Length: 306
Length: 116
Image 1 (cartoon, rainbow over the protein chains, first blue to last red):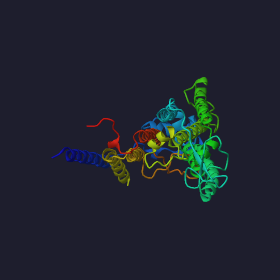
Image 2: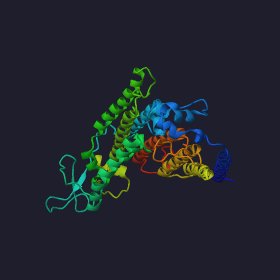
Image 3: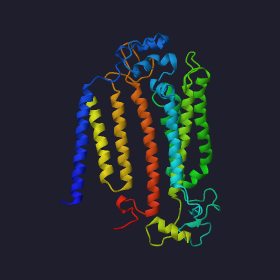
Image 4: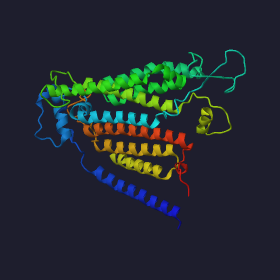
């Protein structure tokens, strides 16, 4: 038996072991009791008078959270209050994971300083009928002598449908963010949806359009500012002699989680926008490279640099 | 009924591991990581499910005296897991972009400097 078939045998055996353990665990879990049995909780009574909760019969942390939710956080959505009030410290760390991912992507995809910044060549329709040198029927221009409407544009159907869809995407994303308090959703999901506009702009107007429409450094600065807003609102609970991320207002239906949710929504939107712009810049798709018979993009770039 | 969810989640995790171990294309390895991630998310959400329960939201037009909630804590944990999965995928894809630039290939067994 050679090494390749023995490797395959080990792989098949380990996958079958994972599946067998998984199925036996699945049958065991499906037959066990649910982790939180909410049948005894009077949710209508809790909503009508939030202070009537009774934690004496609570059988776990979920039960305590559901019972105390309306009295302590004033948020209708329990998942939302778990994320932004009970586990607000964890959400803070989660946002820092996003910042870490952006910093890591920037570090991985950064240009080598010694090689200088790569000059990206765009192609446009020639002003006169002179013979173009680059792609067929197109004339190569640099980044600086490029004015609007001159770079190669995508088909008109894509541009029109993107112009129609872009406001809808932004409004839908921010609808999900702002309605996080009373419906499924919240800052993380809505922020990612709103950040999809970068890809829409890229689809219709290419990398040049993304560069003209978005300012990555401004996005990065405001992202950090929104994270500071989150920390500030969380700290207000401590200034009010309560816990970090505690709802310090506690009168009627006002909730501090709303501000934290909007801050996280903006943070995620700006962060994912930055991430997408960095990756699109690294791909550099509007670049026109000389046709030297090689399919390898690295060799073509080396040929341009020489 | 919840048994289907559990088995499907373990099946997705095994499929993701298979994809990561066997495939040589780096993009396919990323997809395998994503599939294993989604299997784990499905598993966490399914643990909190309670037959007959509603979403843990106090909306008075839909709640009655008899209605009860499912477990809200696994749903909040899944939110964390999804964000971390997205960040990991972004980092992996940027590494793949760099590898493609440097070596000109996406095949994992061709990305090597030393031969022999």
